[in-house]
Image 1 (tube, rainbow, N blue to C red):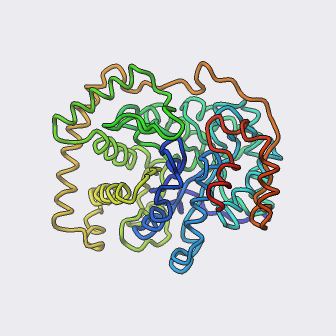
Image 2: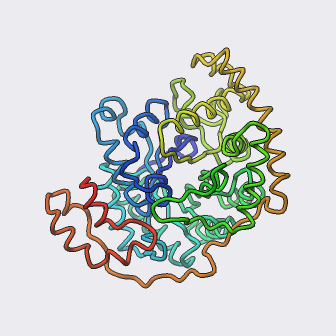
Image 3: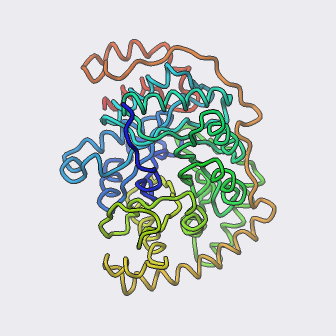
Amino acid sequence: MARARLPLSSVLPPLVCGTATFNSQYNADPYALPTTDIVHRALSLGVRAFDTSPYYGPAEQLLGKALDTSFVRERFPRGEYFLSTKVGRLGGSEFDYSPGWVRRSIQRSLERLRTDYVDIVYCHDVEFVSADEVLGAVKELRRIRDETGTVHYVGISGYPVDVLCELAELVLADTGEPLDAVMSYANFTLQNTTLATKGLPRLEAAGVDVVPNASPLGMGLLRRTGVPVGGQGDFHPSGDGMREAVRRASDYCDAQGEKLEAVAIRFALEGWFREGGIVGSTGDAASGVAWKRGKAGEAGRRKLGISVLGVSFVEELDEIMRVWRSILDELEDGQEGAIAAGRQGSDHEWSLKGQDEISRLADGVRQALGEWVDRTWASPGPDFARAPPGPRAPSSSAATAGRADEWLAHDAPIAVRVTDSMETEVDMRRRSRL
């Protein structure tokens, strides 16, 4: 059932709404978040891609519930937006990249997301498993892609740039087919730009089509209030030295009348727009102007670096969209788009002012960070010990068929095993009954 596929770089939107925030790492109670409002607002503002993972607690269910509404069905057909999810990571120390689990994980994600297919599937946090496991999972995902059509594109995700590059090179050498996507997180930020300086040349040479840059705030590190502390406590892997340097940088921004996160967001979005364009896309840029499919190189078809951002509140999304569109307006042909979308006058002036001011502040922040510029944290950490494989939860078809008691009884014995980092499916079912 192999199907002709357009290059991902010709269709993937360059702005992706991430859902890692829809879990108890970033928030005390993800069920209390306005997740449906966020998804609906994002679509209304032109966002046409969402990224999630089974590892993100209830994120897949919450996203699926938000999309399975009359508001979305009547306005945004499934073919008009992209969904990406992941396989392989089950908990903080538990991974399963086996072909059997990959198949079960895909089926479960389809049920949770309430869709017939997912556009992109990433092998999640590849640095925690062996290269052979990653290679096997990529091959299984491609088999599913070709035989069932429930997966359209295949990629990998993780943190260490060198590991991502090595695996991309291995996949190309072993299979003769490059990866469609490599998602890196926290590696093109105001504090760390190694994805551009060290990663891009190798990933491009390995034939990777797109490289989304996720977590431009460094998993919440680059915030005035410090790293996020959700229902699981302080999970952030950065050390005391890095956090102290960020605090000094935040004080510098405060003295200049600006928040660190505002500088960091604009720096990462604007910088990756340009630096990541070589592995970017010409998809719908959420510019406020109707998008038509075309090819890179055509008029108005400049490839833009792809960014993945998560939010916890609608107001955060609105502010990000204002910044995003102001950066679009600064592009070579951006003024035409601004006029067509009605963003002239004060918004356009704010955009130009912001560009100059953020550039100045970014230089000051990086000076304040000093030796911590381009420093990374260990992943896996020095104390990491991989959990042995254990029993797995069944497909959610039991619950969706009304057999909730059977689901809970089956899951109960593995509740502790799969919760060293995330909520169990048992807890999620008991709380939400999604």
